[in-house]
Length: 491
Image 1 (cartoon, rainbow, N blue to C red):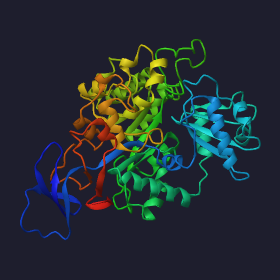
Image 2 (image 1 turned 90 degrees about the vertical axis):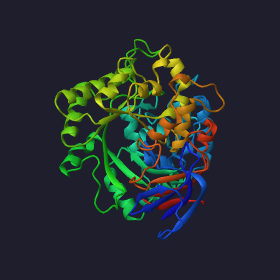
Image 3 (image 1 turned 180 degrees about the vertical axis):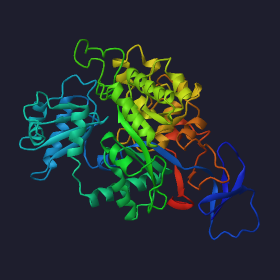
Image 4 (image 1 turned 45 degrees about the vertical axis):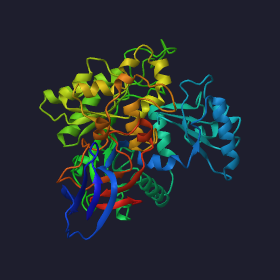
């Protein structure tokens, strides 16, 4: 294939790009003759490396738009009103499953009695927008074997168990929804995802790719309950899975060490305001430090790259300490900390020193800014410190954590560059990063195509290196290519 009349970001030069065997063979001036089998005129649009979302929960993302949306609720009472409407639309015997509530700033408490009042005889489960809590009515509590629970609000491991139990969509239906989600991702220039769904994702993606799903590259993550199984099968991070046309690769080994800010379970050195003296007043440690180190050591010895979920400053300290111990033992510290939302100043340079990637989700800073201002009061200068991490030499990898935020790298990049949305003043704008850095963090370290690259590409209507923040957020994508074939094309 020959792509004619392409512009490269940050340049007014117009070039032709020749693709062969799935890679870029030549970038240069137009030549009068070409042996290409197919020629496509880009019309002086901008050609960039294809984009990655480095942290998604893909099956949950595919389901989220088909669940009752309760994200607009500003109180438990408002959420109950939305649930009442959902109950009215439900078929007889059908459970109501909702998604997106964020209760950190609500004036009233989410309890099962609030839901019971609007859902007689109907099972209701609401999943929080950060995935770390679930709110159930009495009927759902009984179904989950939790009858008599005092509030109906479940956090962390209890919530994860419920989220797994309600994922009862038939494989064929869920796979069709996942294909729709993949098409939407491709239309935004996405060529690959790191899928950290809490399941044995090898079988899931082999099935989907075997049925023809070929729009995305997928690196699938593994969890502690799958570690022995993965090691026994000889899985190693970065290894391609045979029979998947190079689309499916073993991803990282993920450990969730603490909770989240919205659920007030992110592990911090300081107690949360209003929770002083209570159990878990500083957050929740899901995995003790010794256990974390043992799991990471076992994974590293087997060639599996650790990806440690850490949001609070205390959790991040423990995760970095574990990576440091691996280094002391002569093991690879190749891996990542997922989220890294609140950091002490002394821990920021440790990412670069240890070679630990900061896998971050910039849109979370804007979604969480009001919650952070309240519950991390006096510490927000240490929250979502993308600029500081980059200045300290850390490698940034951007993601969405979809469905927590939209699977759209342009939304992610706009958040990192502008630190604002919805017309609000920028939040801690000193932590913004450049457009070039944001693009590189969304494209596996590349902000510009080069000869020899795999031809995973996106074609944009606006130069991303000079686009306004609002233009970045809505960036029109004309085409996406995966190894030189179109997965999205409106040219």
